[in-house]
Structures are given as structure tokens and as C-alpha cells.
Image (cartoon, rainbow over all chains, first blue to last red; front, side):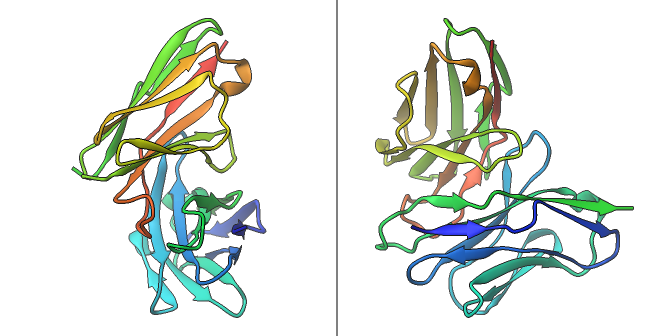
Length: 116
Length: 114
């Protein structure tokens, strides 16, 4: 069964510093990977996805993620953190078509706090 | 129009009440989803509709009854809920069920069961 792991419950970073939110995955075949962000009392907002192609994916609000097949990782990064980036971040994986399940499986989430 | 709307934003109901949650999208998406999210936890899939037909029911209790009247509208009918059903209920849509496209989420309905 497909799964994603977010090893950190919380990440603290100073404003202006680079940030990384970690995600590793387990899936048969090639994965479809997503990052979503959730602000307090709001729905999830899509940030970026990896389907195929370049391992470095650029997304919304200056975020990017690097797909590493050998390490089965898809870490979210941003060169310079903003206080407004403080939120709950979810990594998610979806099996490619034909692999069996078409559900979106989420990690447990990582709370990012950017300190002024 | 690139958003998913949900009404109401907040709902408080007793265990004997009957209420409904509504979700709407006008992006032409043919797959729509209901998720349940407890505080500080990831969303849990409840139902998937594909072309207005129920495709997936993740063993959800019968006190939750989904309905998809047309391709733009998704309802979740609630009856005889339990306090542990209190949660944020999220609706989402995507172009197709099997697509690799991202799901678009609504803002959610915060449900409290007394």
C-alpha cells in the first residue's frame, strides 16, 4: 500500500532563513507526489506536484520540492521563509493510473513556524 | 471560477438532528470527494463520486449519506451523529477520479455535534 511519512511534527525557522519540510514515500511503481498547505481553520491549498520529468519542481508562493528516487524523498523547500508561511504542511502520494488505488494518501502533517 | 465552495461554514447540531452539508464547483470537474479532518490530523477520505456515481465509500457509518445531484453539486446528509463526528468536513474536486491532477479543496464546514 502506498504511504508517505513526514518525520517532523514541527519545524521552526527564522524569517529570512531557508526552510525544508521533509517527506519520504513508499509506493509501488512511479509515484505522483503532492504538497498541500493548510492555514488555521481553512481548507487545503495545492502548492506543487511531481508527476514526471525534472526532479526539481517549482510551485506556488516561492516553494519548490526535489524528487529523489534513490532516497524516496520529496522534500519541500523555500530559499527565504516568511512569517506568513507559518501553517500546516501535508505531503501526499497518489498511485499512478492502473496501479490499483486512485486515492490521495496524506502524511500526518508538519507544522511550520516562522519566527520573526 | 476556480474554487470549491462549501456551506455552511459552521454547523452545530444535536445527536437527533438531521442536517446537510453542501459543496459546489463550476470547474467542470467530474470527480468530487468528501474528507473528514480532525484537529491537527490529515484528512481522511470518506466518499468519492465519479461522473455523479458513488465510486468509493471508505466504510463510513450510514449516519453519513452522500448525494451528487449533478456534476457541480455534492451534498452530505447527516443524521443521528455522535459527538466523535465533530470535525472539519472538506469537499474536494478534480478533473477525473483517476487523474494525476491535483484536487481542489473547499474551505470546509466545521461541524460540532452536541
